[in-house]
Image (tube, rainbow, N blue to C red; front, top):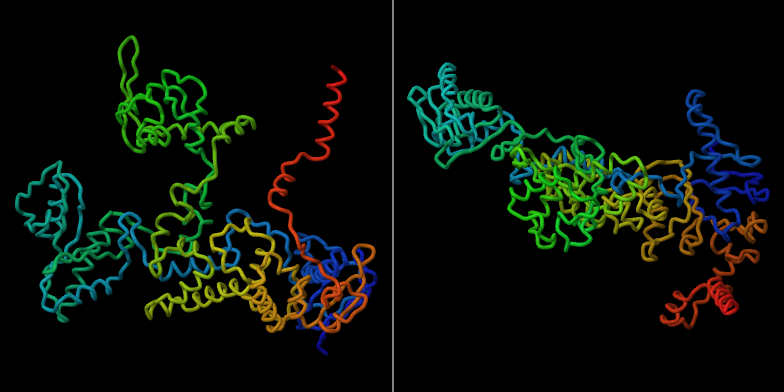
Length: 634
């Protein structure tokens, strides 16, 4: 016969006194009582601990050696126990890479969604870029007006200097007769002379085609030849201008090629997608220019950048002098009077700019060239090499945790940020609150093809977002770092994940999930717990909340007091039955016989402030003794 209840006999864990109890399956059960009365000992240290122990014992001996053995709780017998899941107030132990989106797995579905139906844009010019098959390219060309005469061109040179005589000779040998050079069609057999120091655009003429259904195969051959010669890019010249087409993920305007979008490209935990400047953390612990220059009235040579400390030597001075000469400023000028460009150059370097440095000696001068990385790069190297803790502590005084200068907190690289759905990038979606994200996906408009691809993924995303809303977490953002969540928030996130998992026949044990929750959202939380129960699970909640007790199918009140005065069941049953109990302290408050009175008068704010700044009693006694000693010595 199927067991319809959990039966516990002789529970003696911690302060429990041979507690025996029968709990029906598929019910919402509330354990309540004064703090320290034994309700958590019964729920977590007896029921959940035994469920975990039995699960481990069901595994093979090989698996158990990696998991260790759990001690059997001090109880005579437990029957009818289901697989148990504990959702406690303790922190989840998540690292800084974990966010609300990753913990709830919403971010995983978002990565798949953006990889499959996202529209990729160029990170530099922000123009859409897509990969097309040969058939798609041919179909797009045939959408031009019928009987139009078009020229299929293969771009081989894009904005580069040179005469390209060898290129023209090679094209003649391969059978090509014409080319478009800087917008003009020329014969390759003619003596084409180009300026060596002028940037040119050269496209080879593949074929001239009149658009019609009969010429489709000829057009397809021309497209194949153009894609092969143009390395995946072709140009179609028609009466309305030029039509630029590509079979690769590339921006023909900027000359950049990209990898096809994949779910890994949108993960800040993968080298493929993370921002390389901050390693996917979105922030860096780095030197802050404001802390580096505490006195801007000093000049650079006067050690305005404080961690440089010592007087600048001749070799370093000539490096800085080369930077100043290249940008046109004086190193003796006070820091506050230097232009922003000069300050940034000294701090962050000049990038790829080539600088000529002049080293002067008695025998003459010696010039050498190179790039300048900046003072901050020098300080970073010193900080990394420092082995002594006090040296690292010295440099850390001038460092501050701030948003990454490259990704600005997005965590992913520029290519991933340039993919959009509904006009929004992935980082913009994760920066929305849960309620805003629900509205965004509800009004998202997709094509029929996109719907076919993304229906299941969107269903999971919308469902998990609504679960988070149901437990009162609508104000959180998906990119919120998991370690910054409170115990109640992390517990409700796990609760929402369990609701979304759709498990049946499980014993859920929760530890005061209403803590930190606004009263107006309490009804949503209780509705979620009832939904979990209605799926076919047993839900045990350790709570002091009156609304939870009213919504529970069964209340078990532990007491009558805390510690050694507790460990017994003083009342058990429905809300009305528990409220009539004479031994229950909980019943006294439920019926209004006892209450925590709200003070009728409050201390004024000034009194609170004076109390807060007043020295402690011990400190006042110490000062009194010191004064007495001084008088005695006089």
